[in-house]
Amino acid sequence: MDKVLNPHYRVFIDFDNTISQGDVLDSVVEKFAQNKTWQDLESAWVAGKIGARDCLNGQLSIVKATDDELHAHLATISIDTGFHSLLKVIEDEHIECAILSDNFDLILKPILKRLGLSRIACYSNKLERKGDYFTPSFPYFNKDCPGCAHCKKTHFTPRGTDKRKVIYIGDGRSDICPSLHSDIVFAKDSLLTYLNKSGVSCIPYHDLAEVAKKLTNLIHDNSTTNKSS
Image 1 (cartoon, rainbow, N blue to C red):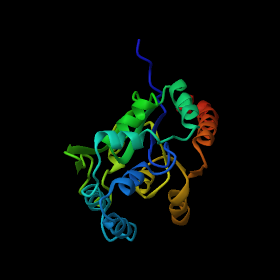
Image 2: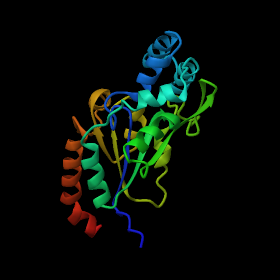
Image 3: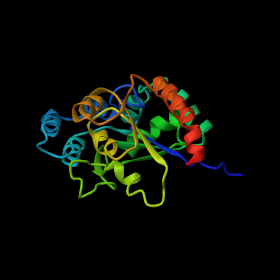
Image 4: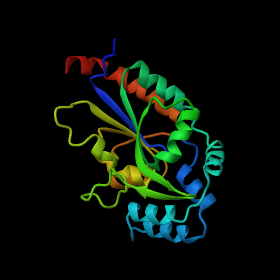
């Protein structure tokens, strides 16, 4: 029998530097880029001169790696050790959960499979191999939100009849847009700085073990209210 999903919450979580330790996509680009123009693209994106899609298109166009080279690098990637604690809370509470990433499927899938996390829904940009080079595509690009390559908020907006609260967990620039459309946000690093400066309510965290504890407290502190709503 299928388990009944938690009727009160949904959880969406970023991957790079949130689940993973460090930015996996940046590490791939830095290791396999055939020249340094990726740095100029990164600077232009940070300065707001280009959108994330243009930045990633340009960066991935100069990445060259065989399957063996790419997989050997991805085998070195580790994740926040607290993610398993967080996932246990989410699964014990029957909360729907999905990874929303500005990274690419060919990079994320081997990592998730190796770590036994393939069961988690994961939405990302797409990467197609062309020999030892790659062609990116962006199935979740939103023309009404051109700054994002992957408009993460489209996975939970508009709400329609789904009244569950959206919990978002992230760390960086690509997490700003979905955070502004979520009910509860766990934030660290540049995302936390941005939300604090903007006066947007969020819950700061250092690692996912801390998120697991805070999420447990939040769910059980609100359990009486939820049952009566």
